Length: 248
Length: 111
Image (cartoon, rainbow over all chains, first blue to last red; front, side, top):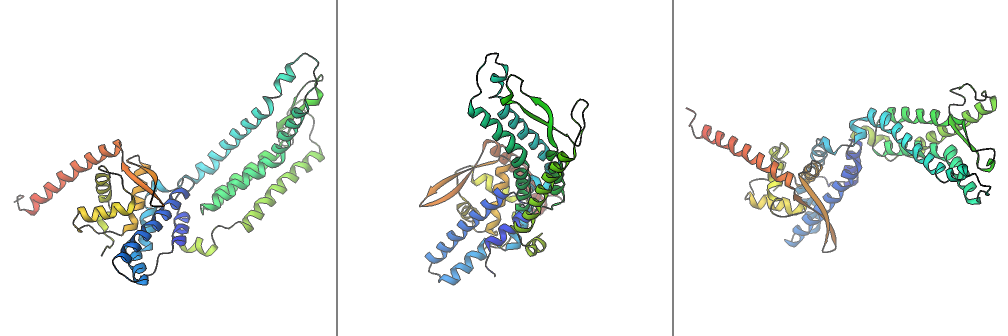
């Protein structure tokens, strides 16, 4: 009987759709079980090689283990069971939630200064805070989120169609964020900032017309984000193509 | 020698596991040994398949687990929950009813 290859079993479980936490725990417990069986064999006087072979045989056949584990649908990941729901429903919901957190992070410290009628200078840390939040949102938020979705899907051996549809939507949608709403006052120009979306994709009456410069800016962001995903696709491969085709 | 027992794959483990773990908490290796001893070696199984069964029962709230360090090793112990006890009672009732019916048939009382 061939020895069990725990790494290969874990790969097969993940590609088969088992949630990573259950796959990791299954392997951890199988290894401990093997050690217990091996010690019991050794205690009874069996030689090393035979003790190991007997222990593996008692653990069971690899195909049976994998088949039995993957037959428990409650142990499969949501992304495997409901890919459309996760990638087309949960991802946009996550985006909205993170956006709300970003806005709260941005606005809460600023509001007292905007409402103030007194002439007080805006502290340096508040200007820094506004700049950090806005620029991290504009430039880091989308790449980080889309990269996280890509890695999440790849780690689970998912079919990449729905993750890529979701990523494509986020890249286009989030890159279109720009000036609609002007926040701040004439009295407090140092904390004025602007937020909004669809400057070039959704034109609202009363706002400035899109310009070639903004279009180039947005297309640049789209291109940069797509380049990131292409690079991840090339270099981040938790499973080989052979594993994906032979164990799925 | 343990081998793959199809019966173990088709629902029997739920009964065995819930029953044995209703008395005391155990980790997987102990549980498999207990099944063997309690069944007087009549139930043999591919021991590795006990873990998906345990995880499945836990995800359904019928078992709970906790990690314990024992002799320098980090073990995962399982125990039947109150919900698991209810489920166990239900399975035992079904099992006894069916086995009584089968025994009647095998004993010739159907004629």
